[in-house]
Length: 180
Length: 191
Image: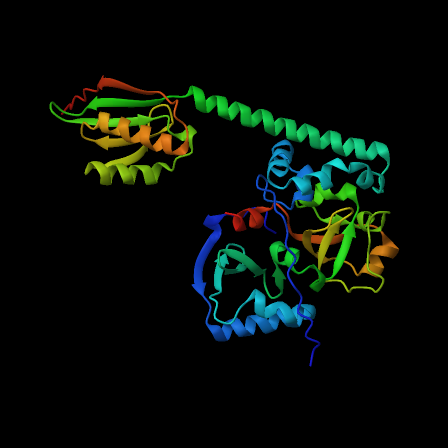
């Protein structure tokens, strides 16, 4: 999603009212319940979260020059920096080593990359359409954030086609933007 | 109420060269530089990652030939990037800035500064700075060679040279040549 993104793609920057900020926090906690205890650290009460509206209906929520989350239409997605800090709050899947190079260049994850030895899918099925964080075999930190194209049970059984649609990965344009 | 187990954030070490978490440097284009940076700045992590490699390699699930293929492809990409950076650096060292003094009318001149693009300076901003500094008009335009040049009104060639030397010295590029040339551009108005 962030393959072509640069400073010029930002249309408007605005500060969020604290009422809107509260709504945002509740929305985020609704989507990822485990982050509830940490949310007050991530978005402190008196902080100024800014909203950047960008090309292609993308909205970024920025605090202190770092991207916290972003949304395309409705769903709030965490930026990888946030995922690195609070890894246990988001559902995990793991791909094998051969897939790392492709994921880092923004490719979607195919089912075989999730079912081969070295990859890992959780025991209970996660439904299709959920946002998951993608980890790599042998690596400690998250590699990317994507949306499940099929439920994890389907991935295990069918093992064909696109398993996860990639939204944000390490080193993509959003990551570079955050690091400037 | 929820159990208030406050989750403490994990501290991640990000590479100073490629900005990725250090374990992902091997997939980037600047692996060698990343390694040097890591060994200089966080030597213990360096040892853990790269020197006790037998542990990590044996737990990889891919066959030896696939691993070899991946490392080959990565090494190729990194070499390409290295060569590209060397070429850019050489380019930088060889290019010189040209300051042309062109006559507009009998007593008036303009200064055209070319070859500034190699140095990664923002032309528009620089033109504005010139305009403010020399209290004259300055603008960016494309000349006959399709290159961008800054045109400044008035005979300010020497001041431009001094200013540019200072600017480049700040950036660390002290060996750049600046050449001053005079040109006569007679424009005959035919009615």
